[in-house]
Image (tube, rainbow, N blue to C red):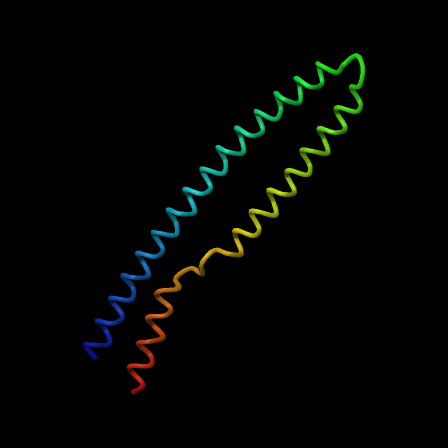
Length: 109
């Protein structure tokens, strides 16, 4: 009985450590993503304004159409990359689940 409680305590500690690690990782990635997105949008907005002003007298409709298509395409690529990254992410509490599976096998034998 004492061994089972000790195993449970250790596994709960591991669960807590993994939860804290994942929470920090998610918060860091979210903060970084927001900063990058903000700076990218700001830069793209200034480039779009510059090109629009440069071609205002000759091809303003063409420039605005091309810029809009480019931004929408880049947003789609960004969404696809984010989706792919989320699919690659390791399953949460994977180490804890593996240890609990091994514990169950040990306790059965």
